[in-house]
Image (cartoon, rainbow, N blue to C red; front, side):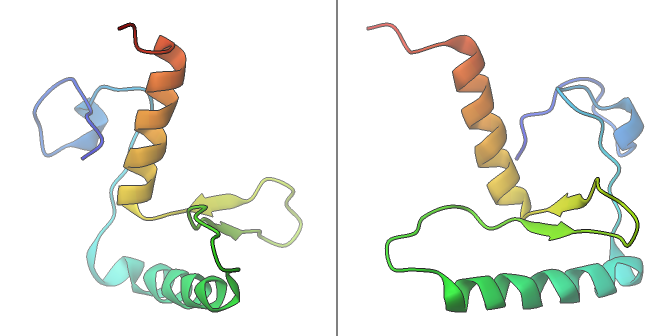
Length: 93
């Protein structure tokens, strides 16, 4: 989905691309997924008509000024594609 290159491996440490990945799944991520869904729903309810901006949850730990951004993988893939297009410049006819 993200168009990552590099070694075709189950181990994300060997993946290529513009960023490093660490994939977590299963029971260990349930608290994160629950809070994300709740925050996404809260944002959706308050979203003004016509607002098409993607949803990003910001988790800001106490005592930190560098929070954690969470978004759906599909949204992240779209953002990554947009950044690649910007980097490459406008398409030539």
